[in-house]
Image (cartoon, rainbow, N blue to C red; front, side, top):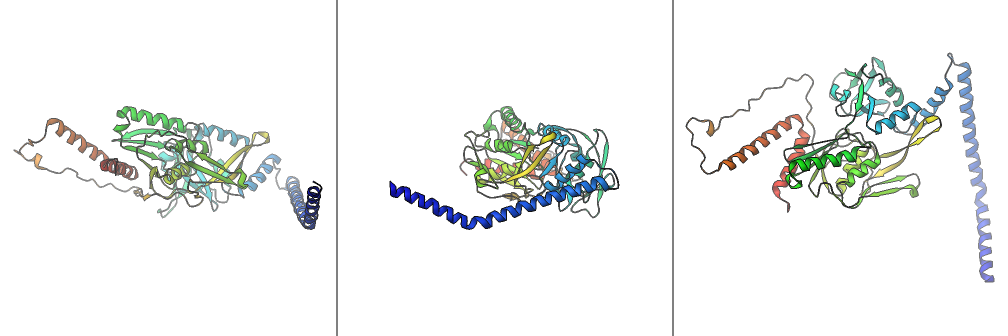
Length: 443
């Protein structure tokens, strides 16, 4: 016992001595760092006082401090920002799915305001704003050099008022103006419909209602089709979906996975990382899935696409997604404001980060773009066949039911051809599911 105590005492003493040997320089460095921080804070105070006392016009101290805080946060990355009490309130309303504005999700890229995506059915969408557009002017006034929050503030206004934004678009030689009438934006998180034998789930955003809308919409389509065996698969359309709530992305992924990891997050400290796993249960009941993405699919959309891709639960079709692989935490601050701070990166089940890289489709399919004012050429689809010839013989090998089935199949094929003209990527996705069904369950 005495030896143990002595050894313990000796070990403690040695530890103290060893620590003391290096603690001096470390403590000195820490003290120097703190002194530098306090010096910088004193400098900030000096500048604030000089501006308040000597600027050519009287300033609002509150706005000046908020601008300084906003500048500090925006210097970190494009997604960290300070939210004034009004902005924080607007954000809470947006996650519930109704707010006033244009209906576009924007980010900042090298000082330029870039459209991540227009939201379905909103004034911006109907006016022709596209993902990837760069907004340079608002009502004739340049927004170059402004912070993202300042640019967004210029785009806000009363419902019913007109705004003219100047847009630079890839493939267009000159900037052009788009007129938009501001409106109350009521987002339907998921729109469900059936195209032929395929259930199409158009997910426009990830708000509080997304998973519930998706579940109810899919169940309704299956019921109207006459049961799950009557559909050949599901198209999950995430194009131009700018993202939203992380927990909703996890729920939507979980809806089609029986088990396994959905997404993991890793912050500054390894112990703060989290992993989210799927629970048993597949709303699609094993039916094949095609996920549509494009350059406007960001954040939560990429979590879903990445999870289903890594688990080989879905075929990803379209073009490369936006590449926002970071997680923002909204922290309430005094005075009813809030701070949106990037606190982690997220990783797909295979451990890949999509930050700045995006999700790459399994099959790349571009959406053909028609040039503005392009005249459509009328195509004469009418063709003559044997049945059109006077006096042609009847087909005596088929019953009336068989002939009716052939005509129904032909009508479906013609509807699919029309869909290709309207939405080539969606038609391509449906063709994949049709092909998988034709091959049968064992192929």
